[in-house]
Length: 204
Image 1 (cartoon, rainbow, N blue to C red):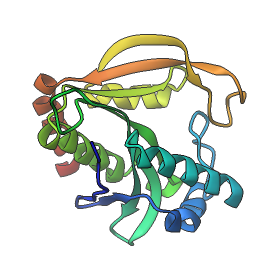
Image 2: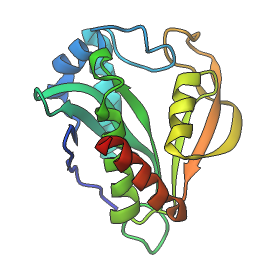
Image 3: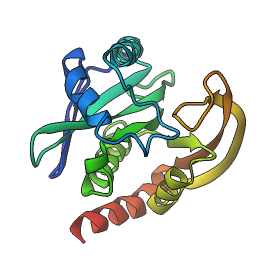
Image 4: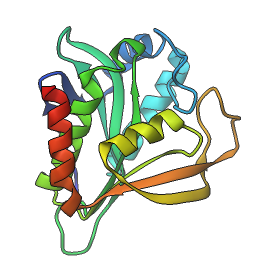
C-alpha cells in the first residue's frame, strides 16, 4: 500500500514530510552542538546531508519509512528529524500493522524541551489511533543510556538485547561495526496510560 506524505501538528512541534529543501536548515540545526550525537547519525557536512536525504527519501518511496522534519513552532525553525521505520504490512489490511519510531535527533537548543515529548505523542497517536497498529517498536544502541532512560520513562516495555543487530552510528562508535540493540515495544492495551503520561508532561 502507498503511504502518502502527511503532516502532524501539535502546540510546540510540527512533524512535516522531509524534502531535500530542508537540507540547509537541518545542517545548521545539527551543527549547533554535536556533543549529544554519540550514538546518533546526524550529518555534519553538505555532502553527508545530501546522502542522508537521498537515503531516507529512497526508503520513503518504497514505503519502508515515513520521514519527518521536526519544526519548532515557536520560531518556525526546523530543528531535527524523526521517522516511522520498519513499516510492516499484513495481508487484508490497508494500513500498517506494525511500525518502529526512531531515527530521532534534535538540535542542542531543542533538547530537554516539550518538542520531543509532543513529537512522540503525535507519532504514537497516528500509529495507534489512525493506523490501529498491533505494535510500536522503539530501539536504541544498548550503550546509549540517555536514550534508554527516555524510552523507559515513556513507559515502553523492555523486550531484551538483540546482539550485533544493526550498524553502529555516532561519533562514539567505530564505523563498520555492529551494535547491540536495546529493544522496546508498546502494545495497544498499553497506549492509553502512555498517552496520559505524555499529556501530563506537556500540561505540567
